[in-house]
Length: 249
Image 1 (spheres, one colour):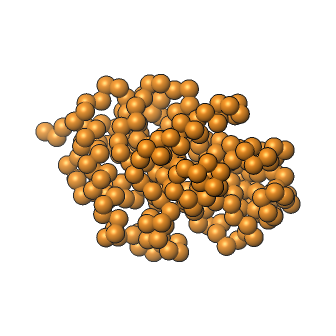
Image 2: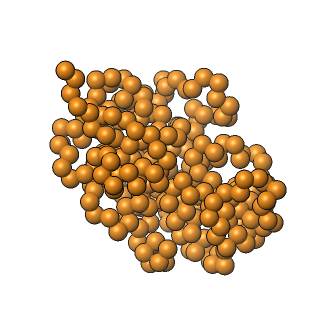
Image 3: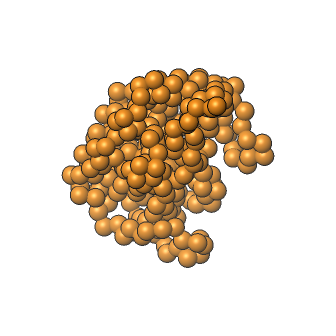
């Protein structure tokens, strides 16, 4: 009889492929993998539908029934490529931003950064327009995740939020971390950490999805995504949360 598995929520974006490699290389692991958008995953975790989840740090604000449980994250140390604002004008001329709401973290992040840069009169529009022709002039689109690849090359300007955070606060950033409920056994967390380590260490030899149309995908994993949750990323998480609270976002 097979042992019962623990529900674990992952994000269904390309940047989680190294994590999946770790699970695929350990087929007898203890986890039942569930794939959701960042916002859906956070909601499910705090509704007790899973014991462990990879969720955006914006969903941790004013929560206390969790603990960060691995040495890994979805982060960056400079340009991240897949979180940013596409626009038809320079940043200082933007009057409104359409918000991709798949991740509350990215929505809060763009607001924190714009406020710190003195761009305080932005009109924030919830949800992305269905067609580009529906977008008013002097507008930006906050896009995150895999859909960013579809926007690349179609706009005259791109503001990479990873780069802007690093320039503004001189720190790397962590967009999402693995969190667990307090009653999870330590042996399960150690197993998870080992699985993730295997996946991250396997990036140089990782096989990518056949037929993908994304330019320089191997470079994206090597140069844009930083998976280790180090002390500077932990400082960035606390700074981000304090900025959100200070600005009452």
